[in-house]
Image (cartoon, rainbow, N blue to C red; front, side, top):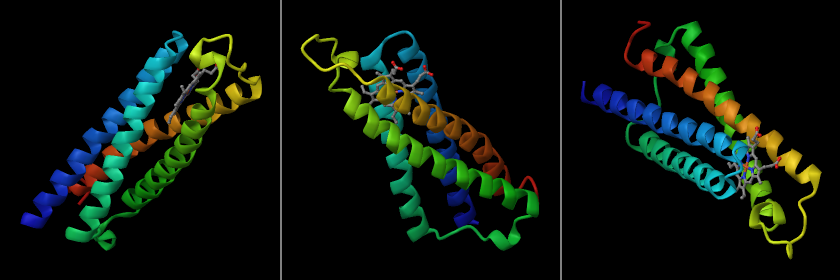
Length: 158
Ligand code: HEM
């Protein structure tokens, strides 16, 4: 019983954490659309830090509590889990690329505002925008499917 409660607590915390990730990411998009580059950078860094917190906590959870018993999960829950894992992988890969490309942009006039710094290549801006949008969309879909996983953990489908 205690292990079940710990799992419920862990996945509830993970869902709240991911809601914050989505919140920062969506807010970060709003900020860049308003021209607030520094705020955009801060929001996206905050989202990235929360993802790192989740990844560390997930490793610790696997070590202490172990994996979920997927044999008890129905087909719909397993498909939802597979879609979720795909979205999280997409968020990590595209988000990592957006961070790297964002760092390169940070040295340009587009971010510093200084005429002494080089102009950002249109292709660099477009590339960052593209992977950034993919990361944000994946984070939203990842959160939605995480709701289904928590419902499964709560035993809604059993
Ligand atoms: C995981 C981290 C990041 C993500 C997911 C992300 C996401 C995005 C997205 C989705 C856009 C396009 C917004 C739109 O639809 O118009 C964008 C634009 C932009 N981002 Fe980021 N971003 C990240 C990190 C950074 C960093 C570290 C910087 C550096 C300061 C940065 C600088 C910019 C700039 C300058 C633009 C505007 C590009 C343009 O003018 O077309 N981003 N970002």
